Length: 267
Length: 179
Figure 1 (cartoon, rainbow over the protein chains, first blue to last red):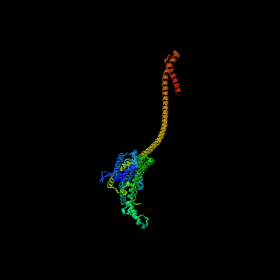
Figure 2 (cartoon, chains in turn green, yellow; figure 1 turned 120 degrees about the horizontal axis):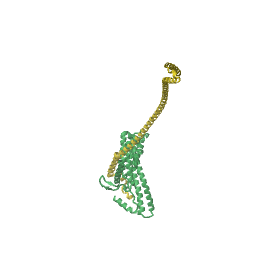
Figure 3 (cartoon, rainbow over the protein chains, first blue to last red; figure 1 turned 90 degrees about the horizontal axis):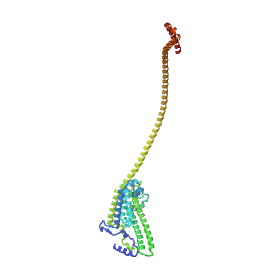
Figure 4 (spheres, one colour; figure 1 turned 180 degrees about the vertical axis):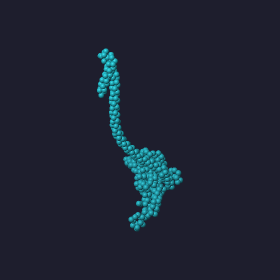
């Protein structure tokens, strides 16, 4: 670790500080060595959780029959998740049970993602593998439970692994692939999609801004114009990251709903 | 630049123990918050709002219904009142003509009675006049005749026969006049 930082310091003098994957493996800064150790990202996550609990908690506690602007905005978010994600995919009858789960996922992932562009935090709270994985495992548990409850495990597996109209010979290939999909690929793809998006967003953003810092402030040469371009790029990328934060939360919530819905028997 | 990324990329995908701990703690905390407080609270607000709106619509419908009923009742009463008014008018008219006819007949009978009374008193007065006249005329005529005839009438026998024949004359004269 110290070697990495040493190298970073040396390079800072001669060129822009390039963000690396080490940004996602920061050193432990609190309770080192215990199971409750915290690094920068975990700390960001805890802080954001407290903010969510406070802000949304106060909003809910003060919720009135005639909403103000902020309450209206929060209600719009709740209704958006309910109507446009859950009910849209699985309908109201099936969906009712999963509204709280998907709402929790959407709101939490969205706000955790947005930490990536909040000054001072500058890294998404979903930017270690475990947080997306935890959400994905929740989805995983829920769609297996739904399958067991709604049609029985065997019927579900048969339905998923033996698609209709596939020639029997092909089943040798299809069954393992489908089984892999249900057991591993679905939760893993959820995890990696979110995690990788947050990583990539952070690296691009950090690259733009550190390049701006280097060319505009440290270098003092003809490259200053290039620094202006990277500054604009950094600005644009910040907006883009805000969009990605929403998009990834939406995709995660929608796919979770779709996976759960696949566990229900088709009519 | 690769030298910076000394950590193998695969390390990113191997969660640290503390990462697992904190991720799960936070997931549970957030989930409990949303399940137990945030969503039920908003759901109750939504339900209350729906109930209020539906209640408002129902109330408006009820009010409209009541207004319509009141209007119908009012119109019915109005037409009833019209019928009654025309009936009362007819009755009044009939009664008025009745009263007029009554009054007229009463007036006529009264008039007839007054006329009869008048004639009766006229007749009795005439009778009275006749009686008193009879006495006075007798005395008057006697006095007059005495003056004219003077001495000739000093004789009481002549006097009484003369008076008697004169009264007879007057009597028959009054009888013819009364007829």
